[in-house]
Length: 330
Ligand SMILES: Cc1ncc(C[n+]2csc(CCOP(=O)(O)OP(=O)(O)O)c2C)c(N)n1
Image: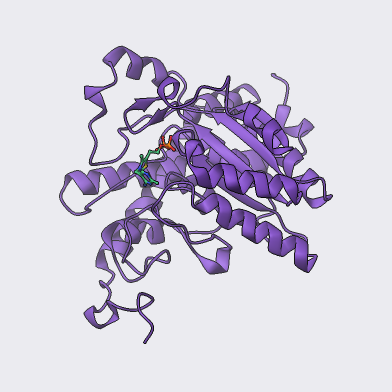
């Protein structure tokens, strides 16, 4: 039997099975939302597909009882791991009042849920990075033992917010982890047309912090590096920038058509790196899964997503008189 890498990282068999289920749940919620979009029932979807290992590996390395996350629109895996429910995510796609992110007012992907310490985000990309740095500053000023994690895409690392935030975090040695999910595209713009530096992790040096590049298709590799970054942050050793190399399996969003800028061959090639298949293979190699068990997990999660869809679809829309809530002072 293959070497149980997860045991060496301090993860139990149950932990890695929970990671796998969270990845599958994220994928299946996303797939369901595309179906509902194409059926004309949901106006918009933006996907996590391809990035689940990076998201779940990172989230499991945090302390999900105390840490804060300022995620970006693809982070279904992160918010599920932090306690958001399948029906809540689907309700946000329908724009229903039970959506915890905005009560059905925002597009899906604008995550925010106070009780699970998921920090509300804005639409302009990278604005979550200074928000996370602000939370980290609060932790330092108030002497609190939590870490703030924020994530963004590779294209978003070219925004001023990213650079200003990382510089501030570096100067003040703040307990913040900035996690870049590098899928090598910003909508249709390829990586090489957006970034001139050798990679993104190397930018850490300019802000006086540690930078790591990691295989984002391997949740255990991601877990290891985020865990290390968290330990450093909690010990007062400052921030970390992590670049997880990943893939985007879908179009940018339901309003995009990637076939006009990605070839069939490219799409076939990246599918070989589907993180759910790769992690499933690892779990088979170490004897925790087999085809039958994988099917049982799939069936169980399909049921969960069906139930969640039913709850969300039946739930009421927000009342018209709530239209101005949280917009103007009343
Ligand atoms: C400041 C700003 N500019 C442009 C947009 C429109 N926009 C939304 S997502 C996106 C692409 C971001 O790409 P990347 O950061 O690589 O993340 P990915 O979608 O590839 O995961 C753009 C340009 C925006 N939301 N905010």
